[in-house]
Image (cartoon, rainbow over all chains, first blue to last red; front, top):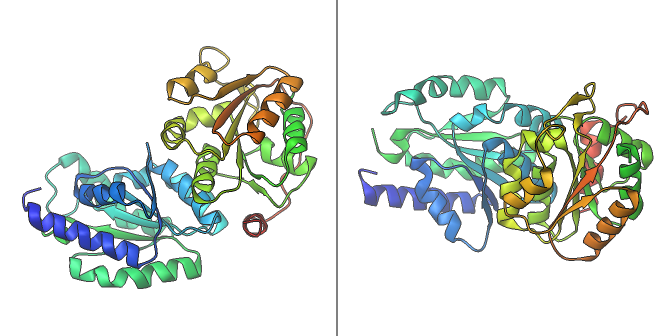
Length: 172
Length: 183
C-alpha cells in the first residue's frame, strides 16, 4: 500500500465498526485492500474466524454459523461473488439466511490490474440480480452507517453487501 | 450397503446430534427414514453440506454430523482443507461414496476411476479418517466417533440405490425454523 499509515488507520476503523455492528463470525478470502482487516481478524481471540479456500465455501460456513445464532460476515473481493452465486441463491436466499458481505470493489476507479475490470463492471448489477441490497462506501466517513445496515439485514433476514472501492481507502 | 441403509443406520445411531444432509436423494431418504428436528435438509447448493456442518461446529458445542456424497465433496474439495485447518472436535463428516451422481441418473464420479477419498482427506491433513466397508463397520466406526471428542471423517462404501423417494415435503423456512429451535 502506498499510504501505509492511512491504510492501517482505515483498516482499524473498518474493523472496529464491524465489531460495533455485532458481527461475530468471520470468514475471508484475501484481497490486498483487505489485508489490514484480515490481519486484525487473525489476531482477535474474541471472535470466530477462519480463512477459506473459496468464497462459496464461506457462504456455506456462514449459513451454519447463522443457524447456530452467530452474525456472520464474509470478507472478500468482488471476484468471489461469481464463485458463490448458486450458494447465495439456493442456500442464503432460499432459507432466508442473512450474511453480511464486506467486498473490496476491484475494477472500480483506480484499478491498475486490467483483469479486474470485467467482474468489477458487473458487480453492482450482479448483487441486484442476486437480490442483495448493496451499499457503496465511497469514503470511510460512511462507516457510521454500517451498524444500521447490519441490524436491518438480521431483522429482515436478507443479506447485504458493503462495497469498498479504492476511494474508501483514499487511494484515488 | 445401499445409501438408504447407511442413512438408516446413521439415524439409528444418533441421539440429539445436529445433522446436515446433502442435496437430492440423501435428504429425501433421511426424511423418509425418520424426520428429526435436528436435521437440516440442504435442498439446493450442491457441495455446501460439509461447509454448513463446519460453520455449525465452530459456532456451538453440540456434536454435528454432516452427510456428504462423493460427487458433492469433489465439487467443494477445498472444504476438507478448511475442516483440517480448524479441526473442530464436534464435527463428524460422513461421505457416502457410491462412486456416482446418484440423484441425477448414476453418472460415474471420479471415485469410480481414480480418486481415493480416504487418501484425499489424509492428504489435506485430517488425521482421523475411517473407511466403512459394510454396515457393521459403519456402525462400529460411527459409534466410536460419536463417543469421542475429536474430528472424524468417515468414508462409506455404498452401492446403487433403486428405491424411489419423494421430495422433502417441507418449505425451506419450516426446515430452518425447526432446526434452529434445537439450538
